[in-house]
Length: 328
Image (cartoon, rainbow, N blue to C red; front, top):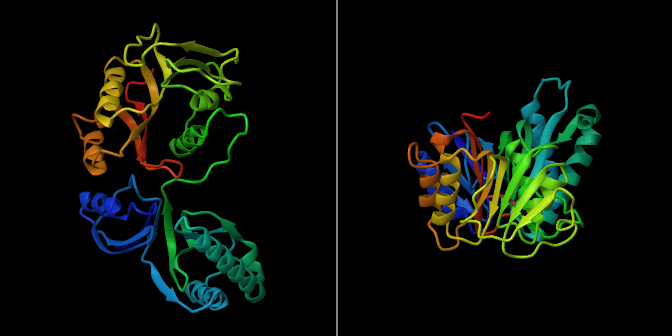
């Protein structure tokens, strides 16, 4: 199978190495994308954001010409089929302001031309980045890749809550969206390295009770929230008095130290679910990924569900989400 995988800019080499872990064969790369061939691709990838199957390269000199060509490609693929249900579509590009604008302009042209040519079909178009539909990755100002089947690995830009104490709030909101689970009212959340309170705020806003563990200060509205308990102790010396429903952890520590802490919590069954952020600036990210997914020494043996992603809101980081096997 031929695929086009998208990723953060400057992470192409890392994604190539991840592809090779699963016997994929990278063939070509550009800004924020890689073409690769698979015998059997994995269901989960960390550094990929989208996967487009059997991509077709389309090249035209102008926005209007690209938009018109994409309508032609779409209608040829549709053939005599009659669409009765909404079909997903997405116009993607690398996170470059000018290229994003270009993709948006091409999308507008495509939809306008499709509306004139096939009004009923155009009305069924529904934004979405997974399934069978029409997916375009604008790779350059004169080139785009087209696919009729795509998978999104869930990364997306989240909306900032102006009351949140820090922008780290966005990471956790994105993680919950990918994980498909989040703290509920009356659940207990332990937030290690909580200051200034962005992750605690996310849990509190859902009605959970939070134990925030950090020597640093919290900011309002977290520090004065009735459901917060702030313990000014070292996260590595903290010993919980009761098991938690959730462990949250976003600390400026090396991955080896954070992984050891997480495994201690999992060994002692101190939490049911977790979201933990790993900083990868001075670490080989692929070696870390192999450690995290090792069948006996990593996290796999503890978890019934495990997702590892480089989030849209991660920088030189990856975020790990899991639910333990023997959940109460």
